[in-house]
Image (cartoon, rainbow, N blue to C red; front, side, top):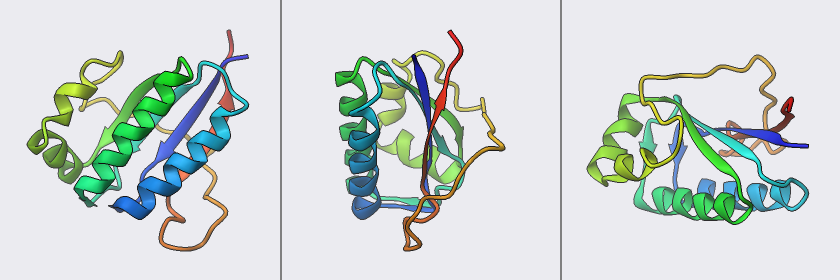
Length: 129
């Protein structure tokens, strides 16, 4: 059964948050085949190069599991960082990339930890075939 994973990035997305996201993705993808991963950048206010590198690592993890990556809403700050680093060109290669497009989910569940990464959400949802 195909599954969707929604990732809602926190306001500060740096190396620590990227490492946590990578680990959560590895854990989720160990039991899921061909996932569809949606990344919501709407809350991102600051993102550093280590955070961007972590996103690239996540993209590699997703592709190694024959998954698909789509971006949801992108904050102006995140859009600027993606443009400055030219990663926006990389994301355009994925189906469904549209910086103006947004998605919403009323079933977003906060992460279990209550530290600075608590805003990051990774939620698996079944997808109808």
